[in-house]
Amino acid sequence: MADSVCRRRSQPSQNAAEMHVGTQRQSNGNINIVLLGKTGVGKSSSGNTILGENRFTCKKSLSPVTNESRIEKSDTNGRSVSVIDTPGFFCTKLSKEQLAKEFARSVKLSAPGVHAFLFVVPFDRFTEQEEDILNKVEKVYGKDVLKHLIILFTHGDEFDIKDIQSEIAGNEVAKRVIQKCRDYHVLNNKDLNNRQQVSDLLLKIDSMVEMKGCYTNELYECAQIGIFEWFWEKFKEHFLAFIDYFRGKIKEFIMSMPDAAKQEEKLPLVKMNEPNFQ
Ligand SMILES: Nc1nc2c(ncn2[C@@H]2O[C@H](COP(=O)(O)OP(=O)(O)OP(=O)(O)O)[C@@H](O)[C@H]2O)c(=O)[nH]1
Ligand SMILES: [Mg+2]
Image: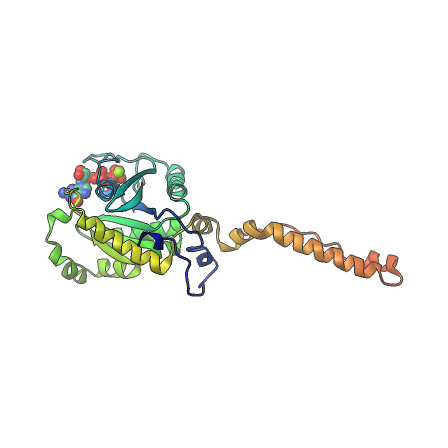
């Protein structure tokens, strides 16, 4: 159900980053979906299919069409759904820095968390190149992203969906990639009226959120700067205050001892430098 989104995990956390999975709850039952993938694979079209309306520009083109991360919301299939469209990996219109900024924005736009990343691939030859792009997704969003990611095959109108399982079983790369992720789904973006395909996708997302909670901005920051640095940034104020408190206590103790003045001279001067994580 809608109110099951962003659930707190009942299992003990595996690592520090996971502690933040599902720690924030959305009261309005909104579901946040981020579309990722190579340019031209049908991300914007899939966004429109999910929302049930043509909100994002999509077209056949020699050049990338989407150049920025953008959010669109709609009440569809009895749910309040937000879709965040992103520029394609290898978008030739953006520099590496601009692209990184847009990926960061995709997570910020999804606050308080992403319920599902959809890694969009057209149903076509599935090669190591697709696997490479997924590796890049992992590099940008961190390893945890795979726990919140569904492979979304587009062009569902161009093949017989009944064959999908045997098609996957017959392709080693596709099999490997799908095993790494939570699930897969097929969309026919040429049929906006087929709402069943969207209901089925939302059910898959619900069950993923039920198990793994949602992906938060903190996980993204963690992926960007590394876990130790993230912890330091987050807790350094508390840590330094804690050290200060104990230094004060030690000083008080020493001063209360006979011959205190002499002892004070021996009190080590602790200077806290910020750790260097490079
Ligand atoms: N037949 C068919 N065509 C599709 C489907 N999904 C997308 N397309 C077509 O693929 C082309 C590219 O789709 P877009 O949605 O613009 O792709 P994109 O990934 O957003 O592309 P960029 O914004 O450039 O990264 C368009 O002409 C779509 O109509 C589908 O399920 N079936
Ligand atoms: Mg697009």
